[in-house]
Image 1: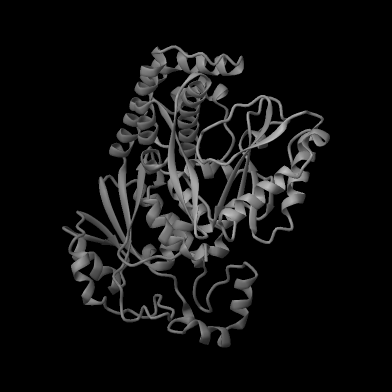
Image 2: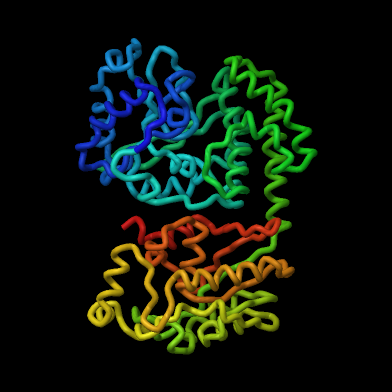
Length: 481
């Protein structure tokens, strides 16, 4: 593990991790935020520490807080500051010069999954951190990639920011414990003085930088001071012209710790959020929509390997579901379970594509996992070692991924505004695995339900996933067991 920082910072990390490493309840402990990105403690308002545990209750939180209080920070860092723990969730800062503030956020597995769904931007940034104990956060459950929908539906997205500004309050959350269970309770604190400035700066910086990460499809550290010079690359010129000057004013005020902010910024920040929302909505509206769909269920979807070698009909009981879905243009795998599904959901001609075929299982077609283990033990051995072997006389996942990429290049050029693609389980696992940056050896864990729509958008000849994160929770349920 590489730790960026001076001696005191490294000593601090070592001291904290030494207190936590023997706690068997801890799955992951990770330092995130400015503490990770900056070289020293200088100009860091608080230290963000994320801990994911097996069991979360009141006793757990107090035990972890106690461990942090046991460290002698004066002797360790040579500064006379008392530890102050911020145990809230959200952008609330304690802004204390007298204390060493640790923003301690504790989750269990389910809580972490819920946080990824509701606050993907936050967790996406956390996933960059290389200062962790035991497991990386992304190994527990990962964001994968940012989406257009996240700007609209995320807890720290446009609608919630606008709501906070309207109420002139910051929303944050705290745990409430009862009978070894917990819930999160929403609280508010009025915006005033430094808190107000910090929140406005937080909104502007994060909306712009999150959009750049989304557009570039890169989870890397960007700096608002540098990116503000290139705002025209990502937004239209009118937006850049309207907001660049005041964004630079915020940056300079932050640099020189000038927390006073004029009342005109109250209206300015509202306009900024509204115009940003208009940009997102316009880009969604101008995008071509591609919906991927796994065919209707068959009687042979019975835990045996169903690939290209068998060609069953769909179960007719699913017709009611399919009759609710209608598309003008449909691409389909030529196998009957897809073509029959396509016929029910299409209002027009169906375009058949061999590249959309299910994986070729070769000699494994029709076998159960139990029989496969007996007949082809070498295949199973290679899987366990993270390899992607071809099925005997069949294909590998890499072969399907090649077909997928050929099809994606074709569909980018399709001028239809809304298209449906009816295909198969492994094909869709490859699609989701690639777009959500899941290692190939784990693609088999992706759970693809029948007849659930997975939306993708094509904008400026780039394809972006735009799947509701509640649906993603279903796709990734095998990763959190």
